[in-house]
Length: 264
Length: 314
Image (cartoon, rainbow over all chains, first blue to last red; front, side, top):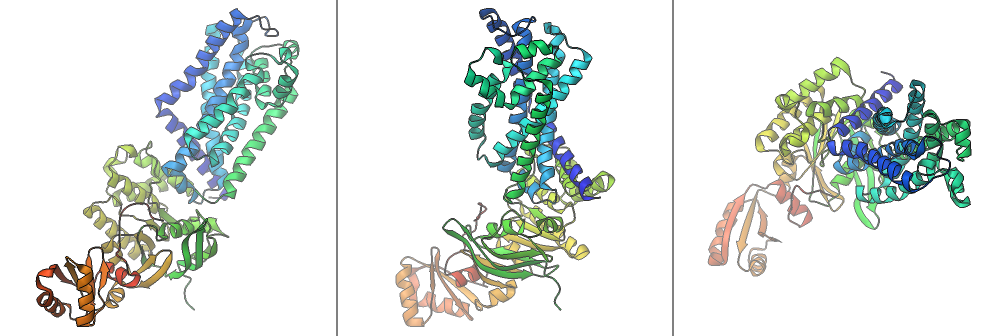
């Protein structure tokens, strides 16, 4: 077997393990699906009636918040799936992997692919629910949305892996990542559009990689380009470039980190 | 020309901050040889083990496996070694078979060849009937056997085992010894194991005794025991210090005081025991004569009792 075929075999096997382990922990499945549905419902129906948020489009706030809920599923699942790195290190599994000839790139790819699959499948489940709640999505829109979700999940799981590789405990990682994830989600256009935000907030939103994913998701879910521009969302080209660059940088950083330290 | 050693350790030293774990360690393991690293907790054996398993770089010195340097060419080392970790590296949420399957994939094995090897290894550790069970539902001893099956799955040339017998009952320990002996006959397997069990060390060709990061002896068990002398007399007394002083004075011997009594190596131990019993009478609680064990060798070389336990070593 060639080196690259062996690398793909190892990465595929590790990714598959991530999915199998996830399915054997029912708590993780419930948490990952129920949290965003709840958020969406509470935000969409609660906030939407209390405030008149400008720039949300004619579909109302429930529809506006749907893209935000999808972004949340991807964000939470992708990042928290990489917690398994800390568990693997603590439980000893990782030392066995690191003492094997599998390339470090395969170890990183296995984690990222596993986390991405989990994130996209869960967001996909929420996407199926869309018509039930009145959000109309075309088949093309679903394909478009899945592509966006995949790009987002790749970058976010890379980010999670970089943070988790050095983390000492699951608790510490949780605390730190919550600090990163909540502002990241709130300031991505998921909850309110950039157009109504203050200057410094708009600046933060512009450098938040999640902003670009949320904009493209909204476009996939049927928002017109005019409506998006009016809401202060970035264009399609900028969004794709940012998503791909973010994913590439994060995955490369994870690979570098894993290759540099020989220790388990 | 001598053949390339299976494992070569050259002047390795390692520090964790200001704490010294290994000092100038040098030794070779020949192909097909079984060597035990014997030492108490904190003696540095786990550090050495992690260096050889390519998981850690030493502060100083070089180590190689079958000619491949662990620092410069870890990939080549990893392909040739099998590692049995002290803390398990098996995934509790996966079944026994799934664990072995993933492990095989990491080594580029797949398909029918992998399945056949998995079945053979499970047979070897008597776990075929539990192959579909989740590992976290197995007993500690069974989990240990999964770990061992895993480290042998890819047919390594050099097996590194960190406390392989931890948690194994005597029957499982014997069958592990048989399994390893079989692999050595068939494929010339080399094995370097850390252990705190004297009988496990006795079964090896050579025993390396580590004490506080230094190699204090490396020889065949019989040669090590021969250096202690013919027999070992152990004396337990109420006032051990006073009795030791009298023995030094009246018998011209040098008893070693340990927390469990006095130890004296003597070519004619049984005769000495009789004389000691006569001389000190009721001051002595017990007196025993035995052939020297590796424990006695350790005491002789380090001046301290060997406190073996299954806890995590340094």
